[in-house]
Structure formats: C-alpha cells, structure tokens
Image (cartoon, rainbow, N blue to C red; front, side, top):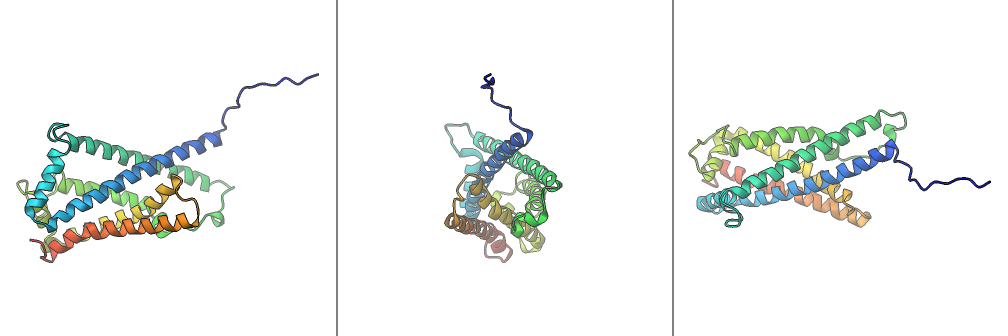
Length: 242
C-alpha cells in the first residue's frame, strides 16, 4: 500500500527563526554602523577647517546647517533630515546590539555552551557593550554642549561656532579636552571592532588575506579618526589656534 505524501513545507523551528532574526539584526547593525562611521569621517574633516581660519570654519558650520542641497531643499531642511536619519541609525544600532547581547547571554547560560569553546576576542570586542553605554552618554553630553548649547563651557549663546571651539578647549578648560579625548578614544575602539565586524557580517571576510586587510583598514580608520578629532582641541589648548 503506497504511503501518502504531502507537499506542505514544515514550519521553521524556534531555533531557525531565532537564527534568521539574529542574522537580520547583525545586518542592520553592520549597515547602520557603517553609516555612522561615514558620518564621523566627514565630521572629522569638517573640524579640521579650524586650521584654516575662523571664516572658513564658520562658513562650513553655516553651510552644514543651512545650505546643503539648497535650492533643492529649503534652507535648513537637510540638517533635520540628516539628524533624523542618524538618530534612526543610532536607535536601530543600539536596539539590535542590546537584543543580540540578550540572545548571547541566554545562549551562554545553556548547558550546551562552554566558556572553553568561545573564540578569543580583542579588548575592543570584549568591551563593546560597556563602551557603547559610555559612548551614548558622552554623545548626549556632546550634543548638549555643541548642538543645543544647553551646556556652555567657555562660550555663550551668542558665540560663533569657531568661538565655541576656542572657548571650550582653552587651556583653562583642560578637563573638557580630557573628557573629549576619552570620548574619542571610546569611539575609535568601537569603530575598530565595528568596522571589522560590519564587513565580516556583510560577507567581506572571505579568507586569511581578506581578514588581514580588514584588520588593517579597521585600525587605519580608528587611528585616523582619533588623530583627526584630537588635533583641533589639542592645538587650541596649547595656543596653536587662537
């Protein structure tokens, strides 16, 4: 007697659904992370206009806030669209990171997972979650100081962008430079691991040579960002820009 067959596709198991969900979250983290790194590179380049003169830096700040894509968009529209996109990337990045951390923590609590089988991680990788929390707090402080001007250190509400930088990073405000250095250092540690992890998630880590290239690029981008962001405040503090 022939055995009846069915063409119905069996539903995905809970493990398969969780695996697919984690893959999507990792992809979202990779894409949003690369968007944020690209923003940091452009922001760093803009800050280096401090070494041209006050007019160049103030013009850059004015162009950034009012004139990008004008007259395609009305004055000032782009910066708000840009901020919404960055905020969406940041929220998506943090949410996926927290979700994946919870999933990893749950997996580690399973009797089938042993610490001896975990791959070795760099210091940056091990501190990504703690660094991410510190980074979020410092980003809020940075926005309160230089975007909303709710925190005014060395400048007032009437100061130009150039005067804000000069006042905030003057020698008497050395502690602001120190906080900024910690901020940038945490960012660059996050970027070093995040850059490598993002391209690995997106399939670029295809072999030993690719792994070496990605590591070199990750370190290069991290060091470039650290040096580029720290040059203006250090130069201001030691009187090389005034």
